[in-house]
Image 1 (cartoon, rainbow, N blue to C red):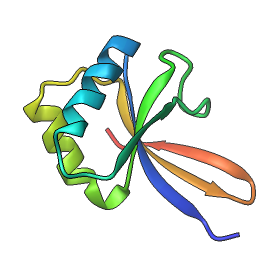
Image 2: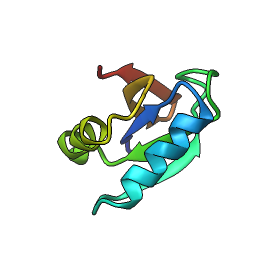
Image 3: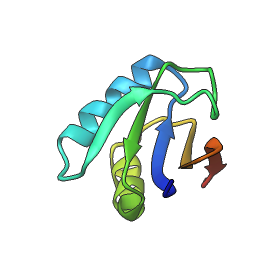
Length: 88
């Protein structure tokens, strides 16, 4: 199986995740709101998944909109399952 990599933004609460979703909808970026991967945290049920090549744009959106996030992660899926690496 080929490795699959993507980015995930986690939030401190569902309220902040919804604010993030609204901010990302206004941008020209490929993203999805997903359940927070259990490999990262169990604190908030929602996260934003994005393409890693958009990391600079993602950081700009977070800063510009003053989003309250818990973290930005790189997720890697391979034959062994998912692995998470914190990027910030």
